[in-house]
Image (cartoon, rainbow, N blue to C red):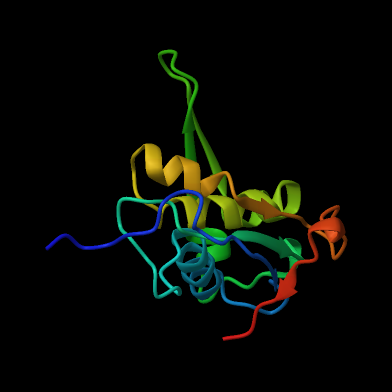
Length: 142
């Protein structure tokens, strides 16, 4: 007997809004990653993208615990010799606060084509406003 699983047409996608104000970065990222993967649904299938769309607002007000603002370093590589760039979490929060949340969530998703497809359903904004009111996102509470 075969196990039934939902087809791509049967997957119902909802839109959620999460407020990052005074939220701890790792706890927020794990909640968002769970929503993007669809693990909160009874129809979760590991090899399908069953997740929902997530809009995160107030990314500039997220909290990093301990000394992570000064000690956490983000690396990126240009591809050229000597092209390794370093940025502290404090500097990243000042310049691109949405990127801090995006990188934390991306690290919690699968590292394959399916994970990249899930990541495309994420929208992060530094302020309280977002342009997705037409999709009628619901506020998510645990």
